[in-house]
Length: 173
Image 1 (cartoon, rainbow, N blue to C red):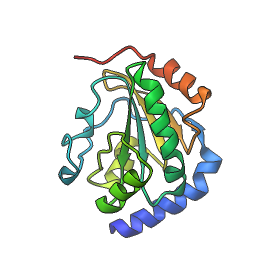
Image 2 (cartoon, rainbow, N blue to C red):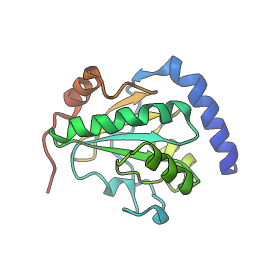
Image 3 (tube, rainbow, N blue to C red):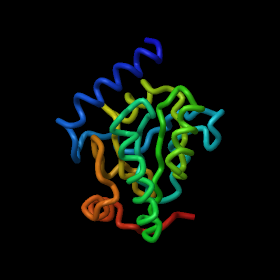
Image 4 (tube, rainbow, N blue to C red):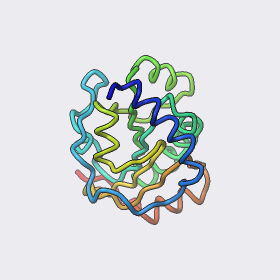
């Protein structure tokens, strides 16, 4: 299946399914998988190498309207979580790095933004059904929570959910 078709299908699914399915969900892999990342985007070769402590991992794309809408709230969340030693990472499934970088610059998003090597593999390994989807990853790489759909990440309720799941126990060395 070509990437343009996958992107179009995922975009439709994100728009149709997320308002209905939004919220916490249990179905998730036990540990952050060794998902290949694009070398031309910089950073580690595998997603599982990225977290060095508790992490909120948001999977998004520029072609996903709900993803674009929630990105500034994720940036605000990152500032609030820093005092709890929890990092926010925005994993992109974009094919067009220039478009992604333009979006990040325009909205002053400074979150670490690795790029998945294969959107379809990303969805398969993370057991994701739509975008955006956010995972709460413990310091040891275990996925301890998942939220499907867009969310007001800059609100106190989101912060409480994350702290309940991850605790802010600090970075591992």
